[in-house]
Image 1 (cartoon, rainbow, N blue to C red):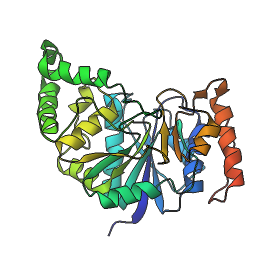
Image 2: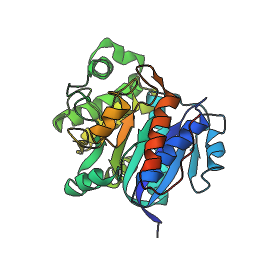
Image 3: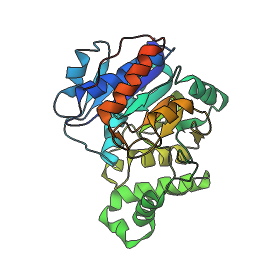
Amino acid sequence: MKPYFDIIVVIPVGPNTDPGFIADTINSFTHYTRSSYRIIIADDSQQGLGAQVKKTFPDLDIVSTRKSMGAMAGLYITLSLAFRHAVERYAFKLLFKIDTDALVIGAEPEKEALQLFEEHPRMAIAGQYPLDYHGHPWDVGWPRARIVNGTMTWKFIRRPVPNILLRKLYIRALANGYRTGESVFGGAYFMGETFLKTLLEHRFLPNLLLGKLNMGEDHLFALLAKSLGFELGDLSAGRLPFGCAWKGLPVSPEQLKKDGKKIIHSTRSWQDMKEADIRNFFIKQRQLAPGNTLTAVAN
């Protein structure tokens, strides 16, 4: 029988990532969660960063790539290897993918997700969706153009074999209500075990052809979800837990706390604040709140 955990946490790590920031992101989750969990580092650093972090967190798993996969669809490959590891090794309710520039800032960040996925068995991915933090629709122009170019224009011939697969998936997704280019924002999100098992059964964890496409990993996973008849879900509206933006924080750290947010992205900046400043602000917040672990001071 597989070991059971409520939450599997997957953290992708690329080259030159600050190990102190990785540790701080891990500490932020372990401090606030009330669920059982297992952490997996998806290590694409080619620098042994996963092994370095494991010295501080000896119970985590490391899934390393043999060569650098990079960002975009390469990240789909890196994450798929870690997701497959999770499905093959463990039983769980949810998988929580969180980038190294994302942070947990509130108690029980998984609470609303557990309820959402229990109420919607065909839920695949949920997080900052379908609107940005300020209530505006995400600009899906770039992923829409990539999909249209690869399936319906002469640019199909640039990657003919991967684009044949992309076209098949796209047609199926459209039949299931897919809006071209939509996705759950990729900085942090929850995924359901049923969806991940379905991806594995259909040999999408990974499919190496998809790694050749000019698309982001979040766009690919959303397309796969809709093509397989699954749903994308909102965990960001109102006082739901996600408060994410692409570059920097969407509002000030203080406002995120006031708004009741629990999972934020990106810690890289807010106005004149740099990443260490933002992380130290939330470290102080953790020191004031009951939790499960001691925190590491961000570099």
